[in-house]
Image (cartoon, rainbow, N blue to C red; front, side):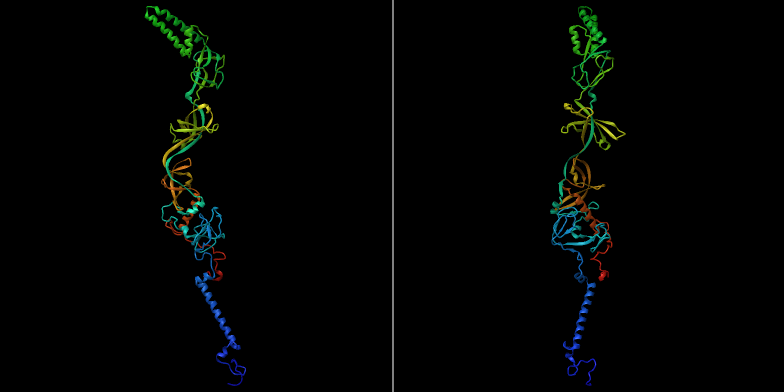
Length: 521
């Protein structure tokens, strides 16, 4: 080798070539550059391996780029939720924004099965997502679906609800027992007071004459049986008095007659004259006074045949009367009729003799008891109602004719299983109740309802005596039961005819979109 420096071979200060370990020492100029390139190559290799692992190893990807709910387990340490809306989660105590119920602390971890669209439960996703309106999908937990009634004979669209004893109190859910007792359906109607037609008496003239004096001279006056009503002058009555007195005198003369036929004839004439006076409504006291005095009186006093009130007055003093003419109308109001109209479905169960109660607006505290006395045979074509007549006593004349009253009648009296009416949830086609199975568990049941009245309902089937049913806050149980039934269908529960196919939701914004780093692969 020549003394000239060979190109590309390092030399020391004396001009000698450097070889072996000395050539790669850090202090040498060329060896520093080789060490740098070696370290750079190692770093680039590690970065390349990390990128490959990031896109191909899920665990490594989750470690470097965590997603909310990516491990399907919600860490619920110091987390709070609503007993009726489990998807409501909060990291501090408070109230549910939906129902206002106090949030309860969650113990342990809850496993997320999938996510569902808040507006359409049939749309699900295995990872967090957003719908087309930007709303976050709601997580569905395992404990929400567990025990939801799959495989149990429950009403369609309903599932069992497991609330928990503590949450039952917080939600205000109350239960009442189903008991066996008598129940009836009360019917209320507005009736009108009318006089009892059997207690109305019209006083008419049976002879021709004139009214000399009226003792009852205004309408509404109270009269008593036997009390004088009026004094009437009638030529027929005067002539009949004379005939009777002459007949009595003839009987006295014929007492000594040896002829029996003559004595019987005279006695018969006297008896006929006396009978004629009675047929003219001449009082017995007047006839006795005539027999005692033997003097004919110009006027005859007519007495009241019944007690009651003067409800009709057709004559005045000096009025000429003819046979058959109405003079006065006397009505006994000690018992009255109530006529009320009932609808067709109510009238079919009314029977004569049934007990009824009565209240009036004028005297709200007073209640009278009566009975059904008559049911009219025809319906009103205008109102499609049936008129029913009730008979009531009238102490103290509290019930005045033409007064409006309220009549209550108990129909369909039966004995059976009875629950509070508030336990029923009306859906339009069926009735649902929630049976308290204990430990905060409630089971929905479809029931058949019979007679309803006084805040109670007869249960024909679905609930047995002794079982407890929810009577307060059962609308919360209804919504929760329907929600869990929908979740059961989405998870392919036994009660579901076929599980819905999850639809592809919109990718979550900011957390589920992996377009920028290979997430779409």
